[in-house]
Image 1 (tube, rainbow, N blue to C red):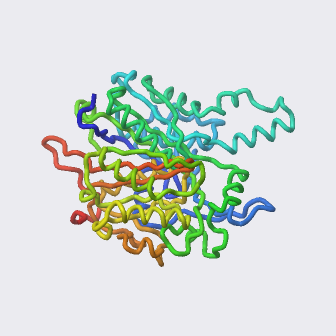
Image 2 (image 1 turned 45 degrees about the vertical axis):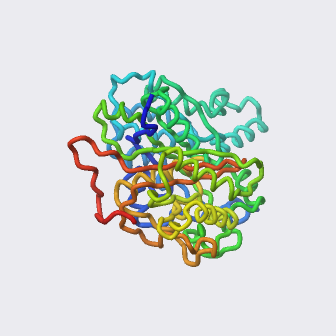
Length: 445
């Protein structure tokens, strides 16, 4: 059993509108240029459905040209698995092999103590719609492989086959909080001694126009009334916010017990210190101030840290008016007198809302800020809502700083509130800590 209750992060992978791969993603975070674009939707659909933050490169281009440092044999084994796969599955596999290659796990490890958590469900709505169209045309057109592909466990089995993972495996839901739910599940798997290594893999959620229209009719989608260029439509904490911008992305994180990572001489990237999940007793989409306050406090308690140690809050901040206001009020209640000292930023201002993968991408962004010494911008933040004015909101350009602890929030439909705490990598015996790659600067606070 892991006595210190943390997990060491040794591998990261990411695919989203900010970049295909960790290097491109990190550079885009610092540059702060939103990846939101506009493409006219099908006839009869509202223009808002054409505003989206889609992956920067196609899966094939990402595999062939964008991912540096991937094990060549792993790259070759991935190609046939991507043929005829959904976009959701393709991008998830790309994130997985990038994280796996960075972790550099030895081939001779005990594969029965290597687990996988797929963070998110209901990923391939476009596939479901496509098979429905084929069925209505002729039932014989429905391909037999759909009987396997319709299950969330298809990705779980594919990743297990590709990476040689024979320990525990499961998929977790959580709606927009799924990434954090997956991280908490992986942390507990490692913390409680059920695995030495756990890959947390958050796949891209590919919505069809049907689901996007439902979100539009619900009032959740943004760009309904605004007329700015597409890149300015996602505005977390800004008075002109009018809903979230649909984003697509995938992320992967390799978690290890500190003992296992140290035993094999792995270089840690960061530490997952703890976290919490809590319901607020409602199936509606309305956020809960009490639920958000409770889960942030419980996450800090689980990690054995106080608010005085936190330097950065990676906010859920979807750009929906009620959601942003509620989270701002929750942060103020939790942090009290320190509210104006702790940086607050929102990845969704740059990459839209990647739904099930959003929190996992946030976690990757948090690790990169810890490693490389910066606070990424809040794009499009010009006029903060009054409730957010007391917060130390990151500006529209990157800040050179050295955060030590990042509290990352994610809240999902179904009354799911989550928060995880990430910290700097532990120093290796006899080695200096990893230096920022650019713009060295003093620590925050």
